[in-house]
Image (cartoon, rainbow, N blue to C red; front, side, top):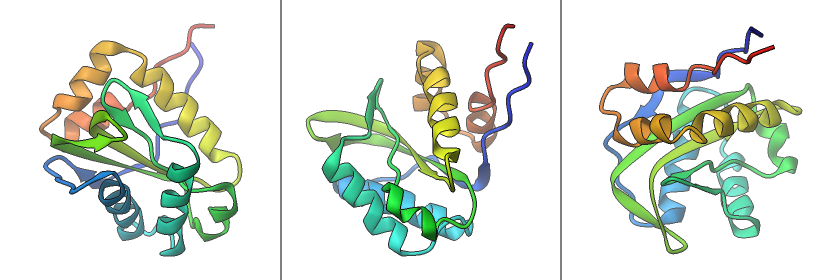
Length: 150
């Protein structure tokens, strides 16, 4: 089995009882969580909104993965994720999102993070468990890398 690097998720960036007025509010909350763990500078928040206006970050299964534009990489201090759970849901252009996994990455780090997240979220049981998680430790466990068969 190939060893996969752990995802850069600080437990302080996991919020399980968030609520948001709308999609943009949810995205800004993700950005602020990334700022609070020192991963990004404030201009990254606008870049996250800009990315969303260009291409929806809704992934299906009630999950969105907001992240900044390529040019915003200069304000990313280190790779990081945040996980915000919205138990009441957020309208995401007609879809209901209950989990946002915010991403900040330097260089090509976002490709590794997106790939790892996609593999986790493509497992319907894992995606369901993430949507229903009520403890930070459970979120951290669910986002552990899936071992790859060689």
